[in-house]
Image (tube, rainbow, N blue to C red; front, top):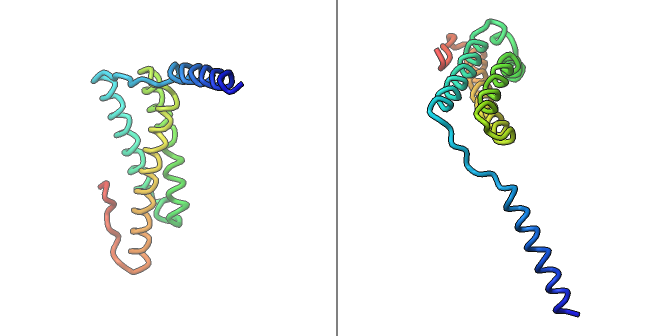
Length: 133
């Protein structure tokens, strides 16, 4: 009985391993042109964020609400960046993961900048230019 059970388990494990190997993602090679398009899209996104931070509305809001407003204003630019990835045949999961990482990093930086500006304003310091200027 034990050898039969062992044989069945071994066969099912090999089938599962073979199926998982077929679902592996293999590294995508991107041309220099596509990489340049992605970099330009990132630059456009970061420029949009800096421009939105410079608007007078951002200075009047509390830092968390201002950050939310800035990030929402530039959300369509991320959609354009996702299109560049999908046009280059990058899997959607990979593109979404990179865009999420980029958005989180930029959100943290914006929140930090706005918190510094808010603290300086409360301390009576002169208005300092943002780092992006």
